[in-house]
Structure formats: structure tokens, C-alpha cells
Image (tube, rainbow, N blue to C red; front, top):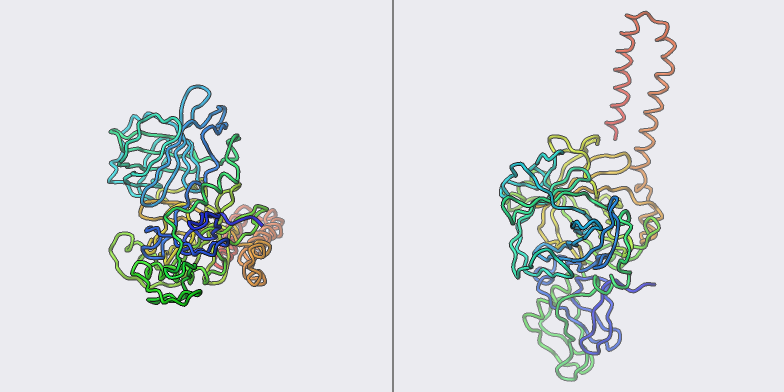
Length: 505
């Protein structure tokens, strides 16, 4: 059995301490039994926010690959940290002497090059994610619009500019299916970069980091640590459930008063324990999906809210809304395959979900073309535990639009700053069992939506084909006027047959 992804070291004896959850407040050293207390303000302000997953990239300086017909090598990296998360910008040099950037944001990779645009560009303050569009050969929709202050950027290797200590950044990303456009408003006019989303497997990469190297960086927990010991006898002391003003030493019986700061830490510790105990899929649980091993590294609970209420909260026009339901999302990680999501609904259904690298084709109203629109709704974060590749906070609000695509659902997720698409399919019995959800796997409801739709769709198609075959001989024997009238009536019958199936879905 492999060790947990996250790790730290004991400040008392120096031994390695393995941790399942990145938001754990306390951990007991298995060597000296000291209790480690992680003191990191970003984790303990509320006890409901996520931790930020650090350096999980398989890329490194010297990684080589191929994009189209050109070879490239990564010669520099800019790792940017800001209030909401972090991302990597890898500076790439191609074998023809030109340069480009391989951007790494969570589970999406984009390769772009600087281009010259000879047309007016929108003002930054006018841009809205999911709404604003721009025509550059294609119609692009704004997918990420942010104004952030970069204070903790780190550089490696070669970069084409000097990195200041503090950098104000105004950047807007635009998407059109797999095409990607970035406008950097640090200059006037904005600097433009054009490219496309890519999958690492398609870049034929060489000299990437191995699993051990990724674990050492991505799993290293930040924040100060201290060991709690009894001031009377020096024995390790452990906090107990509940919030009390005193702790009794198990070795000498001393009654130890808890300071205000430690009481807050104990409260956060109790809250974290309650959160993770309530999860049917614990953080640290391992399982296989599509033949690949994943580990659960984060969990977030959402309150389902009305679509209109979500818009009001995002526009700061409402203070209180009434939840209509809930769902939970679990972030899975594999050093070889990257990220994947499991979704648990309040109806006790489970889905495998992944972010779409390419946007669906959109119409003039920025709605997906060729997909059946199902419903719109909102989601508000109740709490997040574990680590994510962006900082999730209690109270974060998103607006969702779900579409049907065969047995799958396509979801457009819109926040104040970002638009993203994901695809979800029901989990199979084997996948549920692989993650220890044996009781869930016994229920057929997880397969019924997909199965029912598949059967009903095929039944409709068979019935329509049979209708045409049975009536074809009669149509051939009709006069022109009778044939026209019969074809009109038959068309109505076929349309009613098709629509009845659509309505039942």
C-alpha cells in the first residue's frame, strides 16, 4: 500500500509524518507520539476553507516535447501565487529559435505564442467572464477575467523579462472550442497570445518528473508546526473532542489551561474532524478508475440554491438565500494522470467528472450548440476540506447550466471570474466498489439513468425506422397529391414520436 500524498516532519524527533488531509489541524507522530499542531492562518480563519495544493506539476526545466511539427524545450518557469490560487507559466524555446508559453492552470494546459493584433480591443473593465466576446477570425468568449496582485511569484531558469517584487496583473483569457486567446493588459495596447489547449500525452514529453519527485513537492505541507507537550512532565498531550478551557495530561494528570489561540485551533480541529467524519468517501481513500490509481485529496460540500439567487449573490444583491438541496465533490489525484472528480448528489447518485479541455461550440447567446439544455441552478460552498488547485472558501458562489449529451451531462460552471465546462458520467459498479462504496454499488439507481436513456433512445430510433419501412410500399403506390399529404401526416407522426421520447428524458 502506497503512503499518503501529504507529508511533513515532526519538530520533536524529526521523523517523517504522513498526512491524509492537507487541512488536518493536528497529527500524531507515530515515532515519538508528539501531537503536531499546524498553525497556518489560511487554514484556520474559519475551519471551512480548503488548502492550496502546491507544486504538482510533472513538468520541469529541461522537459522536451513536440508541438505540431516543431520540437521545444522548457527553459524557464514563472510560478505565480495570488489570493485565489497559483499557476505555472513555462517558457518554451522551439528548435526554430522562436518562443512560446506552456501555461498550467489546475488540470488544463495551454500552449500559446505572442501575436500582433491590428484591431481595437475591449477595455479591461468592460469584460465579464461568460458574457464578453471578441471576433478574431473566430468568435471567442471570455473564460477568465482577473485583476490580481502578484507578490509571491517565483522564477526558475530563463525568462524574457525582469521579475519585480510586486506585480499588478490584469489578464483576460478567451476560448473558442480548442482555440485559446490571452490578452495581457499590463501594456497598452494589450499584448496578445494565441494558441490552443493541449494534453500532455499529445506533446510527446521527455525528461518529466517522476512520481516520487511530485510527491515530495506537491505533498509537502506548508505552515509552522509545533509539538504540544505537558509543561509539568514533558509528556506529549493530545486534545480531546469538544471545546474546553483545559486539557488533562494523561501522564501526570496536570490540569493545563488552554490559551485563546489554542482554543481556536481546537475548535477548528473539532470542526475538521466532524467534516471528514461525515464524508462517505474519506480524504486519503484510494481507488481505481479506468485502470488508473487515484487518491482522494479534497472534498467540498455545496448548497444547491435557485438560479436567480445565485446571480444575485454573485452581483452582491442578496445577503440571504434558502438552500434547496446539496451535493459533494471529491477531487482525485494521480501523479501519472492528473486530476479527476467524483460527484455525490443528495439523491445518492455518484458520477465521474472531468474538466473539458475544449469548450463546446457556442451560439450567439453563449449556449452550447447541439446539446439539450436541462436546467440551471446555483451552488454555494458550505465547507471544503483537503487540498485543491485553487483556494475554495466557504460562501463561494457559482452558477451552473446542465446539458444532456447522450448518457453524459455537460455542465457550464460560471463564477465571478471564470467560465469552465465539465463532463460527467455515472460511476460503474466496479468503480464504486474500488473506492470502498460497496453499499452504494448494490443500488441499481446509479446505472438506471444512463441505461434508461440508452434504451429509450434506441427504442425510439427503431420505432421510427420501422414506421418508415412499413409505410414505404404504400407511399410508392400513391399519386403525387396523395403522397404529399401522406408525407406531411407521416412527418407529424414521426415528430410526435420523437418528442414524446425527449419529454420523458
